[in-house]
Image (cartoon, rainbow, N blue to C red; front, side, top):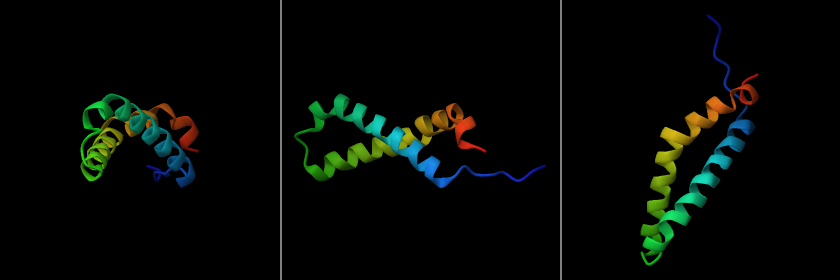
Length: 73
């Protein structure tokens, strides 16, 4: 069985930036009216938690599968 070849780091960086941008944009649209009055530390923490969880379990697996022909040589 052949060795697994990871995609180039620059391609993964682009995919991650794209995914993070989409999640951040949608989370701010959805939650900002409710959490805008919170202190900056708490507001930022909430959005980071949302970003990391959604990137890890939903967005990156989906994008990796969707873009596999571009990501992997």
